[in-house]
Length: 286
Image (cartoon, rainbow, N blue to C red):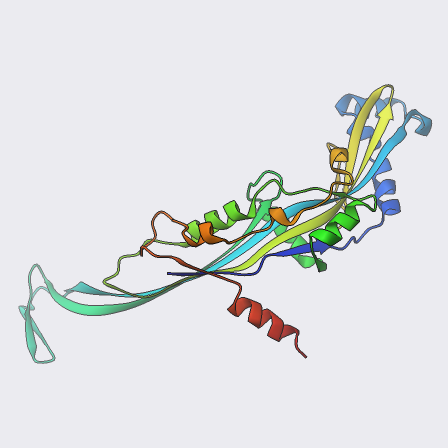
Protein backbone atom coordinates (compact mmCIF):
# COMPACT_ATOMS: atom_id res chain seq x y z
CA UNK A 1 0.00 0.00 0.00
CA UNK A 2 1.23 3.47 -0.88
CA UNK A 3 0.42 6.41 1.37
CA UNK A 4 1.23 9.73 -0.29
CA UNK A 5 1.32 12.76 1.97
CA UNK A 6 1.23 16.32 0.65
CA UNK A 7 3.74 18.86 1.87
CA UNK A 8 2.43 20.53 5.01
CA UNK A 9 1.55 24.21 4.75
CA UNK A 10 0.70 27.12 7.04
CA UNK A 11 -2.03 29.40 5.67
CA UNK A 12 -3.15 32.68 7.22
CA UNK A 13 -6.63 33.93 6.38
CA UNK A 14 -6.83 37.66 5.67
CA UNK A 15 -9.05 39.91 7.78
CA UNK A 16 -12.28 40.99 6.14
CA UNK A 17 -13.14 43.49 8.90
CA UNK A 18 -10.94 45.99 10.73
CA UNK A 19 -10.31 46.36 14.44
CA UNK A 20 -12.46 49.53 14.47
CA UNK A 21 -15.42 47.76 12.88
CA UNK A 22 -15.00 44.80 15.24
CA UNK A 23 -14.92 47.03 18.32
CA UNK A 24 -18.06 48.84 17.24
CA UNK A 25 -19.93 45.55 16.81
CA UNK A 26 -18.60 44.22 20.11
CA UNK A 27 -19.58 47.41 21.96
CA UNK A 28 -23.18 46.99 20.79
CA UNK A 29 -23.28 43.56 22.48
CA UNK A 30 -21.45 44.48 25.68
CA UNK A 31 -24.55 44.31 27.91
CA UNK A 32 -25.32 40.73 26.80
CA UNK A 33 -21.78 39.68 27.67
CA UNK A 34 -22.51 40.22 31.36
CA UNK A 35 -25.28 37.62 31.39
CA UNK A 36 -29.05 37.32 31.33
CA UNK A 37 -29.66 39.43 34.44
CA UNK A 38 -27.68 42.34 33.01
CA UNK A 39 -29.61 42.06 29.75
CA UNK A 40 -32.97 42.09 31.57
CA UNK A 41 -31.88 45.06 33.65
CA UNK A 42 -30.96 46.85 30.44
CA UNK A 43 -34.57 46.61 29.27
CA UNK A 44 -35.75 48.35 32.45
CA UNK A 45 -33.07 51.03 32.57
CA UNK A 46 -30.63 51.48 29.75
CA UNK A 47 -27.09 51.38 31.17
CA UNK A 48 -24.90 54.40 30.56
CA UNK A 49 -21.85 54.12 28.35
CA UNK A 50 -19.57 55.33 31.13
CA UNK A 51 -20.54 52.27 33.21
CA UNK A 52 -18.45 50.15 30.82
CA UNK A 53 -14.72 50.23 30.27
CA UNK A 54 -12.81 48.30 27.61
CA UNK A 55 -9.77 47.13 29.57
CA UNK A 56 -8.21 44.89 26.91
CA UNK A 57 -8.24 44.55 23.12
CA UNK A 58 -6.85 41.61 21.23
CA UNK A 59 -6.34 40.49 17.66
CA UNK A 60 -5.43 36.83 17.53
CA UNK A 61 -4.83 34.14 14.96
CA UNK A 62 -6.59 30.96 16.00
CA UNK A 63 -5.53 27.61 14.49
CA UNK A 64 -7.40 24.81 12.80
CA UNK A 65 -6.31 21.94 10.58
CA UNK A 66 -7.60 20.85 7.20
CA UNK A 67 -6.67 17.29 6.30
CA UNK A 68 -8.09 16.00 3.02
CA UNK A 69 -7.73 12.34 2.06
CA UNK A 70 -8.42 10.49 -1.17
CA UNK A 71 -8.19 6.70 -1.26
CA UNK A 72 -8.37 4.27 -4.16
CA UNK A 73 -8.84 0.52 -3.80
CA UNK A 74 -9.01 -1.74 -6.87
CA UNK A 75 -9.40 -5.51 -6.60
CA UNK A 76 -10.88 -8.67 -8.13
CA UNK A 77 -12.95 -11.48 -6.66
CA UNK A 78 -14.82 -14.50 -7.96
CA UNK A 79 -18.49 -14.79 -7.12
CA UNK A 80 -21.34 -17.22 -7.69
CA UNK A 81 -24.70 -15.73 -8.65
CA UNK A 82 -28.05 -17.43 -8.09
CA UNK A 83 -30.45 -16.67 -10.95
CA UNK A 84 -34.17 -17.21 -10.40
CA UNK A 85 -36.22 -18.92 -13.16
CA UNK A 86 -39.92 -19.80 -13.64
CA UNK A 87 -41.14 -22.99 -11.93
CA UNK A 88 -41.38 -24.98 -15.18
CA UNK A 89 -37.67 -24.58 -16.03
CA UNK A 90 -35.58 -27.66 -15.32
CA UNK A 91 -32.24 -26.65 -16.86
CA UNK A 92 -30.55 -23.67 -18.53
CA UNK A 93 -27.84 -23.91 -21.20
CA UNK A 94 -25.38 -21.01 -21.43
CA UNK A 95 -22.43 -21.00 -23.87
CA UNK A 96 -23.00 -24.70 -24.54
CA UNK A 97 -22.92 -25.63 -20.87
CA UNK A 98 -26.04 -26.95 -19.21
CA UNK A 99 -26.72 -25.70 -15.75
CA UNK A 100 -29.15 -27.56 -13.50
CA UNK A 101 -31.97 -25.73 -11.75
CA UNK A 102 -32.33 -26.31 -8.01
CA UNK A 103 -35.11 -24.67 -6.01
CA UNK A 104 -36.06 -22.60 -9.11
CA UNK A 105 -32.50 -21.18 -9.37
CA UNK A 106 -29.35 -21.92 -11.32
CA UNK A 107 -25.79 -20.80 -10.54
CA UNK A 108 -23.45 -18.60 -12.57
CA UNK A 109 -19.82 -17.89 -11.74
CA UNK A 110 -18.10 -14.64 -12.60
CA UNK A 111 -15.07 -12.47 -11.94
CA UNK A 112 -15.91 -9.12 -10.34
CA UNK A 113 -13.59 -6.19 -11.04
CA UNK A 114 -14.10 -3.62 -8.28
CA UNK A 115 -12.90 -0.09 -7.63
CA UNK A 116 -13.67 2.18 -4.67
CA UNK A 117 -12.73 5.87 -4.62
CA UNK A 118 -13.28 7.54 -1.25
CA UNK A 119 -12.69 11.19 -0.36
CA UNK A 120 -12.81 12.87 3.02
CA UNK A 121 -12.21 16.50 3.96
CA UNK A 122 -11.61 16.89 7.69
CA UNK A 123 -11.59 20.18 9.62
CA UNK A 124 -10.11 19.92 13.08
CA UNK A 125 -10.00 22.51 15.85
CA UNK A 126 -6.35 23.26 16.55
CA UNK A 127 -6.89 23.61 20.29
CA UNK A 128 -9.20 20.70 21.10
CA UNK A 129 -8.25 18.27 18.35
CA UNK A 130 -11.94 17.64 17.69
CA UNK A 131 -13.50 17.60 14.24
CA UNK A 132 -15.60 20.67 13.52
CA UNK A 133 -17.31 20.66 10.08
CA UNK A 134 -18.35 24.30 10.61
CA UNK A 135 -14.74 25.33 10.01
CA UNK A 136 -15.25 24.50 6.32
CA UNK A 137 -16.85 27.94 5.92
CA UNK A 138 -13.38 29.52 6.02
CA UNK A 139 -12.43 27.84 2.73
CA UNK A 140 -14.44 30.60 1.02
CA UNK A 141 -11.96 33.28 2.15
CA UNK A 142 -8.56 34.29 0.79
CA UNK A 143 -5.45 32.95 2.51
CA UNK A 144 -1.71 33.46 2.09
CA UNK A 145 1.01 30.91 2.76
CA UNK A 146 3.23 31.58 5.76
CA UNK A 147 5.94 29.92 7.82
CA UNK A 148 7.02 29.78 11.45
CA UNK A 149 9.24 32.83 11.02
CA UNK A 150 6.50 35.05 9.63
CA UNK A 151 4.15 33.92 12.39
CA UNK A 152 6.75 34.84 14.99
CA UNK A 153 7.05 38.30 13.41
CA UNK A 154 3.25 38.64 13.52
CA UNK A 155 3.28 37.73 17.20
CA UNK A 156 5.76 40.51 17.86
CA UNK A 157 3.42 42.96 16.11
CA UNK A 158 0.68 42.94 18.77
CA UNK A 159 -1.13 39.90 17.41
CA UNK A 160 -1.71 36.82 19.53
CA UNK A 161 -0.64 33.76 17.54
CA UNK A 162 -2.13 30.76 19.31
CA UNK A 163 -0.01 27.61 18.91
CA UNK A 164 -2.00 24.49 17.97
CA UNK A 165 -2.28 21.90 20.70
CA UNK A 166 -3.39 19.17 18.29
CA UNK A 167 -0.26 17.56 16.80
CA UNK A 168 -0.12 17.13 13.05
CA UNK A 169 1.57 13.73 13.26
CA UNK A 170 -1.28 12.34 15.37
CA UNK A 171 -3.96 13.83 13.11
CA UNK A 172 -2.28 12.45 10.00
CA UNK A 173 -1.97 8.99 11.54
CA UNK A 174 -5.66 8.99 12.43
CA UNK A 175 -6.65 10.27 8.97
CA UNK A 176 -4.67 7.55 7.21
CA UNK A 177 -6.12 4.87 9.48
CA UNK A 178 -9.66 6.11 8.80
CA UNK A 179 -9.03 6.14 5.02
CA UNK A 180 -8.14 2.45 4.91
CA UNK A 181 -11.22 0.30 4.44
CA UNK A 182 -11.81 -3.44 4.66
CA UNK A 183 -12.84 -5.24 1.50
CA UNK A 184 -13.26 -8.84 0.35
CA UNK A 185 -10.87 -9.61 -2.50
CA UNK A 186 -9.11 -12.54 -4.12
CA UNK A 187 -6.57 -10.26 -5.79
CA UNK A 188 -5.64 -6.68 -4.89
CA UNK A 189 -4.78 -4.51 -7.89
CA UNK A 190 -4.27 -1.13 -6.20
CA UNK A 191 -4.23 0.31 -2.69
CA UNK A 192 -3.38 3.98 -2.60
CA UNK A 193 -4.12 6.59 0.08
CA UNK A 194 -3.35 10.24 -0.66
CA UNK A 195 -3.38 13.04 1.88
CA UNK A 196 -3.97 15.90 -0.53
CA UNK A 197 -4.00 18.62 2.12
CA UNK A 198 -2.15 18.79 5.43
CA UNK A 199 -2.78 22.46 6.10
CA UNK A 200 -2.60 24.46 9.29
CA UNK A 201 -4.92 27.45 8.94
CA UNK A 202 -4.98 30.57 11.09
CA UNK A 203 -8.19 32.59 11.21
CA UNK A 204 -8.31 36.14 12.65
CA UNK A 205 -10.44 36.84 15.73
CA UNK A 206 -10.87 40.07 17.72
CA UNK A 207 -11.61 39.96 21.44
CA UNK A 208 -12.59 42.80 23.79
CA UNK A 209 -12.74 42.53 27.57
CA UNK A 210 -15.12 44.92 29.29
CA UNK A 211 -15.34 45.85 32.96
CA UNK A 212 -18.54 46.95 34.68
CA UNK A 213 -19.17 47.32 38.41
CA UNK A 214 -16.12 45.22 39.26
CA UNK A 215 -17.05 42.37 36.88
CA UNK A 216 -15.46 41.50 33.54
CA UNK A 217 -16.79 39.88 30.37
CA UNK A 218 -15.39 39.19 26.90
CA UNK A 219 -16.96 39.74 23.49
CA UNK A 220 -15.42 38.03 20.45
CA UNK A 221 -15.75 39.11 16.83
CA UNK A 222 -14.93 36.84 13.90
CA UNK A 223 -12.91 38.97 11.47
CA UNK A 224 -14.12 36.90 8.50
CA UNK A 225 -17.74 35.91 9.05
CA UNK A 226 -18.65 38.92 11.22
CA UNK A 227 -20.13 36.64 13.89
CA UNK A 228 -20.22 38.11 17.41
CA UNK A 229 -19.91 35.83 20.46
CA UNK A 230 -20.68 37.22 23.90
CA UNK A 231 -19.21 34.27 25.84
CA UNK A 232 -15.75 34.88 24.46
CA UNK A 233 -12.24 34.31 25.73
CA UNK A 234 -8.83 35.93 25.39
CA UNK A 235 -5.37 34.45 24.95
CA UNK A 236 -3.22 37.10 26.56
CA UNK A 237 -0.83 34.47 27.87
CA UNK A 238 0.23 33.71 24.28
CA UNK A 239 1.01 37.32 23.34
CA UNK A 240 4.46 37.59 21.81
CA UNK A 241 5.05 33.85 21.93
CA UNK A 242 7.70 32.84 19.42
CA UNK A 243 6.46 30.18 17.05
CA UNK A 244 8.59 27.13 16.35
CA UNK A 245 8.26 24.80 13.36
CA UNK A 246 8.00 21.75 15.65
CA UNK A 247 4.20 21.75 15.43
CA UNK A 248 4.41 20.85 11.73
CA UNK A 249 4.33 17.31 10.44
CA UNK A 250 7.74 15.65 10.33
CA UNK A 251 7.84 12.25 8.64
CA UNK A 252 11.08 10.74 9.82
CA UNK A 253 12.27 7.17 10.25
CA UNK A 254 9.66 6.49 12.92
CA UNK A 255 6.79 7.49 10.62
CA UNK A 256 8.14 5.27 7.85
CA UNK A 257 7.39 2.25 10.03
CA UNK A 258 3.88 3.40 10.93
CA UNK A 259 1.49 0.55 11.76
CA UNK A 260 -2.16 1.01 10.99
CA UNK A 261 -4.62 -1.59 12.34
CA UNK A 262 -6.73 -3.15 9.62
CA UNK A 263 -4.23 -2.59 6.82
CA UNK A 264 -4.59 -5.23 4.12
CA UNK A 265 -0.86 -5.51 3.49
CA UNK A 266 2.01 -5.72 5.94
CA UNK A 267 4.14 -2.99 4.43
CA UNK A 268 2.93 0.59 4.09
CA UNK A 269 5.11 2.89 2.04
CA UNK A 270 4.94 6.59 2.91
CA UNK A 271 5.73 9.13 0.23
CA UNK A 272 5.91 12.75 1.35
CA UNK A 273 4.98 15.36 -1.22
CA UNK A 274 6.44 14.18 -4.51
CA UNK A 275 3.78 14.07 -7.23
CA UNK A 276 1.41 16.46 -5.43
CA UNK A 277 4.20 18.96 -4.86
CA UNK A 278 5.14 18.73 -8.53
CA UNK A 279 1.53 19.26 -9.60
CA UNK A 280 1.23 22.31 -7.33
CA UNK A 281 4.43 23.80 -8.80
CA UNK A 282 3.21 23.12 -12.33
CA UNK A 283 -0.10 24.83 -11.58
CA UNK A 284 1.74 28.01 -10.58
CA UNK A 285 3.71 28.10 -13.84
CA UNK A 286 2.04 30.46 -16.39
